[in-house]
Length: 187
Image (cartoon, rainbow, N blue to C red; front, side):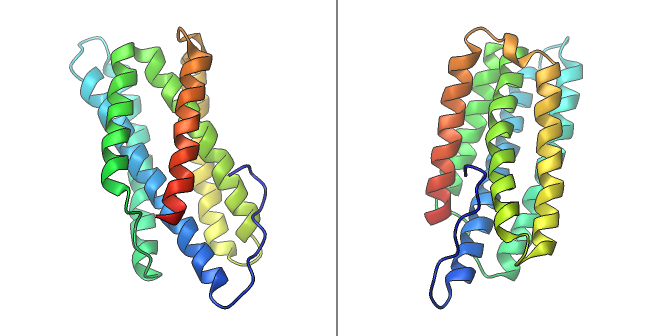
């Protein structure tokens, strides 16, 4: 999402359909994030000098797992099915995490910056869209967004932008995230 609120759709059931899209895509994003961090930890966890980053990745994965558990509960309570793409997003997330970790610690951080930059804007748009109609969910999304921003800021401070080819790597990852968002809302 661009950060701009999506205009309300007319018709019976439109609000429920839009809520289903929001919950489905957010669940998909958190699912992928958990698997990105798992892939990064799988690669970096075996290196003796990577204890610090592995600990940080585990902490961030823990935040994403909490978000995912909340969206699992919301999908169930609102009777919304998860995206049909979930198996692919698990695999793609893990592959992205492992692939960037194989490129090095800074590339793993670059991945975090790219992903979290897209996600925080996505959450900001949703928050603006639902703030008046579902302030409770908007507050939860605001908390999740703050944690995503914290992940991004930590990765920036760890030198993400000094990754060789950073602009290209970040652009490709961001494009993939935006594509996954559009697909997950509908499927």
